[in-house]
Image (cartoon, rainbow over the protein chains, first blue to last red):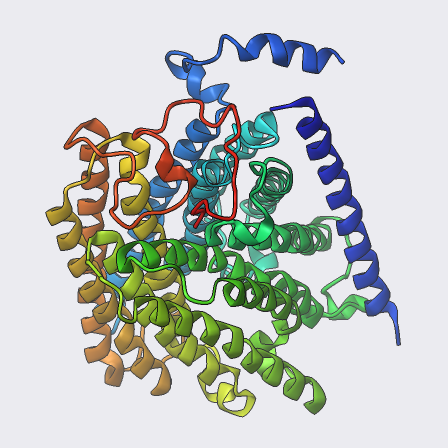
Length: 34
Length: 533
């Protein structure tokens, strides 16, 4: 694996973590709404 | 950085696998880890299958013959947990480990050490889960859906079950992160997303589902744990909580989970049918969009599992219609598979037989799913054997058949040997006949009102239950043929060519059989003319 790929993979993991966070925040916001 | 430094130094010397147990315990090679997942899954398949045969043996006749009712309930619960989390999911992760890097032209998975960890969590999780069978109060017996308040009556086993579910979840989420990181970053130059094989596409989408819903399950079971041991009242009405809330949270996980177990199967069938029909897949892009649509819809249908629990009419209608909507992208897929076969030069080797059986029998499961989606009708079907028949049709001749098709299809690539075709076909016919004798009569039982999860039943259900049990033993024991055939192929046999199948296209078939320990260390160049799927 090239270094650039390694860095890109790490960046993907970070993005996934952010995406998951946004998903749950959105979910809880919807649940709390009403 | 020091990590990169050591990784560079080590790269040159790791062309040969380590010897002995170290190769497996310290494995970072995607092929070794894939093999471990698949072997683990096969073992769990037989463990869960034994439990199923205990269930079917007890149900062969009305009355209580073989096991205590409480043990029967432990068997239904454990059978489901073992099959879902121990057999089907790890089998697909194993196939992803083996095939995704080969299909996208990557040297390995993007995060190989995490890959090792993902796998090695599983044996411990299942050791813990299975150990509950020997505990005071026995294994969990409230059904795999672990609804409170019933599940809170579990004895010493309870925290073990919760922790093992946590471990399975962690393993799945790490596996999913790895799949996404691999597919998004390690594709060979020129292999655009819309040139990826369907198996890679379906797994990419499945991985997103896993990341979205496994933590929801983790949250739900943690709330159960604190309700039982720390005095909270999340699901306790007496303390201001709501047991129905558990069902909502559980099925918000549970329904996408169903698709986690079927989308990779769609991917496998979309690889196998074009190969043996010797035609490109019909409607490639519509397959991708259909998969994505099914994944999206999977998040907004969960309460169709709870129609009888009591919901506002608007809720019943919303979940009924959104559920029926899933038939549209699923229909697109079924029609695409049939159109791929249409006027193809088909041959019927074992993988193709399993793939065709998948299309037919999964569709039966899909149709009974549509029947269950009709809210007013569901009041009759709910918690009957009709539901059991429905989800076993989508999971056994659906997901399990696709896994078997995949093993027969890629086994020559993995081992370098052809499997015994005659034995493969015998296995197929025994399985397909056995599985229908096993599950088809359960539709009739359910429509006649036989409830699920019971060790005894009224006399009018006797005939269909006896037939179903005979089918169970035919299906169960014919799987020994599968295990023997795989074992024999690993040990030796006729040499397989690189392409293996005349109509096979894609990067994995450009490699020699068996695929060397390290592959695509230099990524291949892909152009519009390279057949990648």
